[in-house]
Image (tube, rainbow, N blue to C red; front, side, top):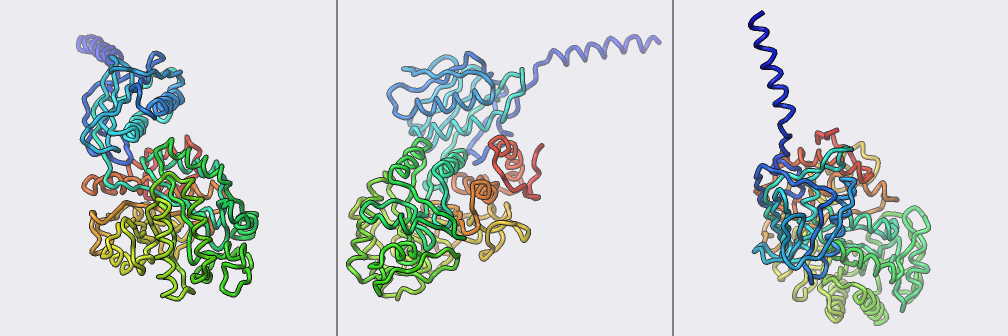
Length: 512
């Protein structure tokens, strides 16, 4: 009895002490960041978001106010609070502060210091600040529980990308996607620090961009799609709106007009682009390699010049993609002649040339890039001619490849690409003779022969997209599948919160 009496007060004391001890914030180094930052240090305290929290932005720096508003909106959505923004001439004592500063990590790099009263995000440019903001948002829960404070573990994140070009491609030619759908894709890329969206704007099945000097391209060529649907196209005003929206998320639009093959929509629209002077029938199947522009006609050259001129004027980014793939019915010499002429036209309108790896069969202009998708010989030939390489290996990076034999969407001609297979490759070790110094970056293409709407798009894109983002951003030394799949598992809640229809891979231990 004597022992029991002494024990009860001790137990009560421990219970009281436990109740009074504040819950320690999560270790910042254990946050499920994707892409994995270069360096994360935990300092053992917490920053609390409250109704008095203000997101400050450095005065006089274009773009920072918009980033501050974005952060305030996101944090407010998570916490249920109204978060204000304010310009600042100097660093405040408390709150969240965005500023552009030379961090030594390049224009897209940033340093984020999270203290218990002040969070500072210093980017090498506004883009760096934007990427720091995305990292901060991954350090907070998807949604705060009602009545609970929103806390962020303190520490420091130093970060910068491995590659300058980190992107995805969306094929809007096989099936058309609305402006709002494209903007949703842009939001997905921005979440994971990707900075490029390549739009495949023309193919055999559809022409998707208004060209005012050749109006029947959209009137006829834009009128259908795979399977015979109504198709669609972007007016120049709509395309400009997409470009502007992407710029606000630090994403560059790369337009592609595929040629001289994959051109049936154009050939059906204008008879004079065909060697026999007869317009082809519209095409709604998925076979490839049967079409070609008549490469030696001057009207074809004028057509290309007009298209490049109008589209380049709407596109502030540096790149113009000329396609060049699978032109199987174009004679080799005609193909080489055509690709060389098109490159000169692209340069004339102030853009840099990029094309699928087949363009390496022609002479390449200074600054050109070849996009590796299948042919190693073409790619190494391009490097020998001085081109940079954009890595998009079909067997690893094609988002339209099925996850496994049970996947109801997509194709499998390049093999199945489960989430681990999409992640466990290094661009610098993919093609013998192509080193990191030769590589422009990484792009994951989504071809849409079987993808008809945004839900199907999301299912094929997620959860593979974050892995491609990490391949482009994070050094290989900091990447491994076993730790990545645990971080990816936590992002399932983010996908659900954004109502993303994603594939719940059995290889990922998704958290409830």
